[in-house]
Image 1 (cartoon, rainbow, N blue to C red):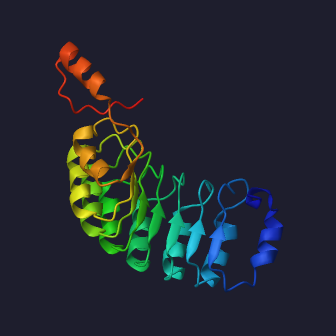
Image 2: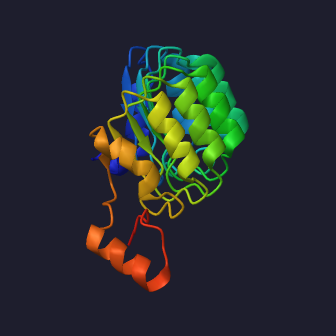
Length: 231
């Protein structure tokens, strides 16, 4: 909670000789954290297992490259709202950090299906993945995630407008351990595909349309009764 208020000089002094860090949480330090401060810390701490960089907007893809080359034991990584993440640096992460279990790529808007597919093919141990708020992510990425990551428990697709019913059905087929799925504002995902997951007790962030409303809609406009109303 206090990270954004830590003076740059204090951060550098505190960690200049440290080589045994396992967790580094620097979320929202965009006011002072750049590659110049972060890279030396990453490069000398090879035991890091959890890195949190949510909202660190002044970093560059070189930060992710350094993480991939220096942190072979990495398990959890948050890059939410880091729009500097590109496909090349993500591929490097996938090639070198195959023990990853949780990755947050919320609002990493440079990434497309191809980059996500490469990540999940290399990091098949993933249990948690967020692709939220990314209009470039669609069914191809979701289906590949489902097929490559049988241990997947949590998937966040909030606001992924290109995701449709077909990939949700594949997810239900290939991910028996799935515990939660977020599809709010995925307007092409309907209850017809979510119902299987709902019946298995998977936690969903959208509610099915009440049966009375379905009948009313069908009578008024001829809609088939599988609409998932999201407001």
